[in-house]
Image 1: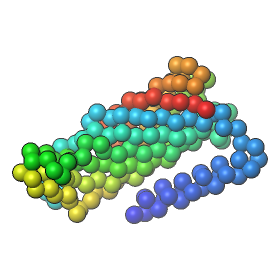
Image 2: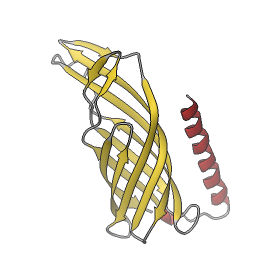
Image 3: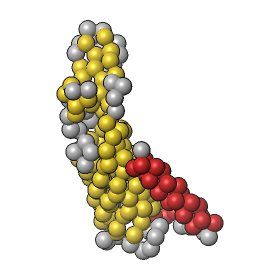
Amino acid sequence: MKILKTVILSSLFLISGVSSLDAKGFDYKDTFVALTWSPSTADGKIEGVPFDGSGMIGFVLGNKKIINENIGAYFGGDFSYNKVDETDTSYKATYNYKIVNLGVTFTMFDKLTLMGGVGYSTENAEFSSGGTYYKSDEKNTQTNFNFGVSYNILDDFGVVVTYNTAPSSIGYGLSLSF
């Protein structure tokens, strides 16, 4: 819970900083958004039962020069997409992640940006078998460290690769700059 409070307070601090910059005529041209896909995540154990990991989709929203010419900030999140269908009668069990990250960017060259941050991960499990659906009441939580690299192929379009430590997942995606 302490980690979640830290992430929320840090996010509010970042948002208030952006708001004050906007009042001074903030230039949005270095703002970027990225969508990512992670094909697999780490397996997990809840209530003593092992569950298979699933895939995740994610996003990153930030500005590459919000602090100075080379240093920026970002906010991001990743969520499991391979949820169990409650109406499915076959057996399926998945371990699900919900992650929120906050971090800094470092632009090495005009086209290459490094990202690194810290976040919070909540995890649960669900399964379906023979028409019976179960979702765990127990949740695991942990600190997540997030790293990434973004490369702009064109001025406003690029590719991004990210890594989250909590689910041990690599994400691949596309980014747009404004």
